[in-house]
Image (cartoon, rainbow, N blue to C red):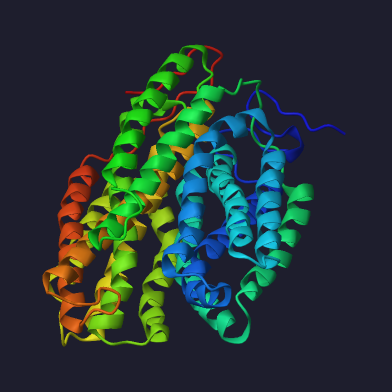
Length: 503
């Protein structure tokens, strides 16, 4: 029997109760649980690679510059694919999109597990990234479609568990597996999990969104691919340029990316007149969406930047072994995930402002503590405390920001809003990593350290101070934006005419 979708965008087979207070059906809960599990798996896979890189480099006889392409190619692919997901989720049914995403992840995992050479391994990671890029916007769009307004905060809290716990446990899991298995074992462990989720999802994921025949604008695809890949690549070169190892001067791809992004934006503005944009930028007409996304992007820059510098400080200034570095960073990630459901319930009851404002101030305290409260001879307890405060503060920022931003949009813009947030997350991650690494390398070089790959305790402390100082300054921007966040008004209902978005 062919699945049908009514004009509300809900699968009639779900037997949803009528009325604005209707809760989740058992089928909705199954679908959300499966999507959350799938996103957890693909996020876990994304963060497991860092610990395995040295072993892969030794096994395949490549240097660190080549090995870095396993993460750079993944990020570039994500940046290229994510803008297309808005169109994809309008054109195809939910189950079909899930099948495409999980199939890509499974195929990429198999290719990587079977790779005898580096080039094939990179190809496997690229195929994996296609599935990963689709999965997060798919989950966010499904949440906004099936979850009643009064329950979205609670469900978004569960989403935050995925976003925080997977990156926290990824390095620990990878480190444990790499002790007893060759690097291919990381992929062989993930493969049956992916296959099982694909098999269950093909049967159990319901079609919850309305499809329509939206044309795919080839020029928009080309422009978005060039713009976002150039930006991510250029930002990734900033850190390498600081130590004289950049393949190209970073400003060249960054400038090219910004110019191309301008053309992409112009093209979307033209296509929006006929409701056929690849990435509908009318989402930013919503003041609540724009402010929440801006705050979230600034916080993500700080998050990704801190993630890259904290292990450097712990390893070279405090002299901790890698296993203890991971142990120090684990509690913060776990607490962030555990706090997610509580923050979600508080959002449902009180709205975003009572959460994001304390979260922004907590983020500032943590980053300024890292900038001025740590140095040679510091206790690891201070680092642990600052990291825990950082992660808990981000829990109070991200869940309300996700809910407030997407909740301010009409249903037909959910997929575009989700794709926009996911795209900015990749750019923010690249920017945070690049900026903090560049500042760290500059600080190390300023001490006259002869070997930037093995800095002295004082040199690593100087580099970390400079990077965290930038994070502290950025936290002031987050505070200013948090003060502007408000509870979104009821989003306009779907219409057949132009998309109405509240200003």
